[in-house]
Length: 334
Image (cartoon, rainbow, N blue to C red; front, side, top):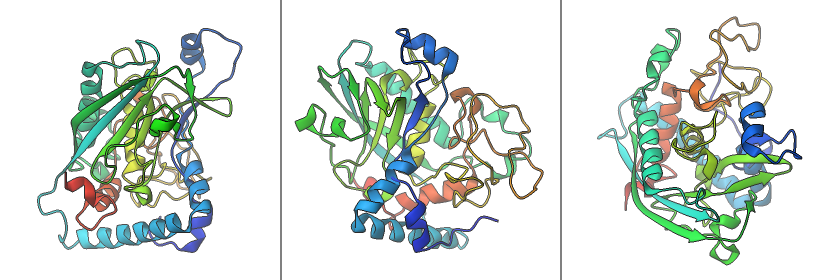
């Protein structure tokens, strides 16, 4: 069984931020849409970036240790009904759009569409919720009691044709847009093309130990933002669902290691990430346990159409960071 308890050892193995990425398997192709259609795989470097940040900052290390300690305490307190009396936190969202082309300048309607996807996925009212296998229905999160409300959209044109994961889009001095009060608002940046080490990046996010820092928030590449006009198979708005999960302290479901630990007890341990559209049951398991893995979880790497649930344990972790004593308690005051 997975445990929430861990100490300094985890600081050496945790990673730094989150990157949904696609390996660019044919860089000579000029038709990127064709490449994506034939070769696309989800990938996320969030934990890798997180580890780099932790290595460089003792302050972040302390924040991380405190975060996980508070998360564990919250999980125990929940059993006694001590937290979140109203059961709901509505997170105010600022969307920062940085565009070079018309296609990158996502419309207000598409932004509203993405917020609607987030609200449906986090409330458990998504249209594909009925696809959860009977095995996992008892541990489905249902309504996570986390909601999202768009409060502002900031737009800025740019001459840049590509962005990296170095947070330049979060700096006005680098042609980006400075965050709007990241303590009290979820800042979501939408940019055009993103690449890193030969990979096309779908998005990335900061974890709660970065709460309130200048670079805190989520970045999504325009082709994978919202639904209308987005690139298949990542065209149902689930890149944002996945990355906001990291923002709310969810790790990848396989724990970013072979048979790793995502610090959630009700997600079956699995060997590694899953891709594409797996068929249930999928026995990508560890320690000889013969049960299907929860590949349909939003924190795996499957295509948008193949992910449609959070678990109850993940709900607890998310609620812990937005609680009045949580790392992101500032989102409750705006």
